[in-house]
Image (cartoon, rainbow, N blue to C red; front, side, top):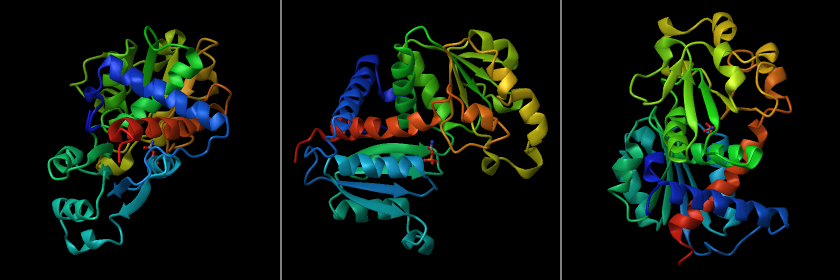
Length: 300
Ligand code: CP
């Protein structure tokens, strides 16, 4: 595999290889091996046209732990504000010797376009409402490490699925790895094209869920007239304490972040022992190390 553009690029054996490699990276970190020489002499460019905290920082940490040189490019403050195109920006980075470009972009399909212009590997770090494959990998890693398996798990993905690249990538990857996914939310926020089960009743789904993944309501991608009322949304689709207690004892609560505390998830749930939210962030570094290692092959 040269690029990681979509979770659909991953068959079951490749996805499992990424998760197993990430587990090895985490084991090494646990043994205080803070840095590996694997990507010494290679250059990873983080090309971010949209804001990010977790993804950008964890890709930077992952590349540095593999001894790669890292160039962080943010569209804000660059020649993009003078009208420079994605293609010309990509060719400029190519001229600087990028071996891999990690891209986040508001336009769905931008990473795919980029992969036709640059010689190095391209990793999709979130494109519009399309996909966020490394988030799905770190989510799968977290489920597997907490619950011991992925095949046969019941995963409820709840909320603003329509605008969620995280949900889209999770639906694809979890199906590949044998989990059963149910999308839950208001009918207006469930897209018709994702082929998996759908429910509009969160209370009915919770007692059978092994995993409940809450999604951020993405107001920035909605017309102002379309905003759901926070109180009404929380009443019907928010995960609060009483709802959390409907889950089986072993079930976990996930959220990719950033959260709207008090809207899709109550603080007592986000900060509870069932919550894997901080663990997901830590696992993201190991998973992104695995992705960079497998794509760049450690060859110089
Ligand atoms: N989960 C996620 O993609 O978070 P950031 O937007 O902070 O990168």
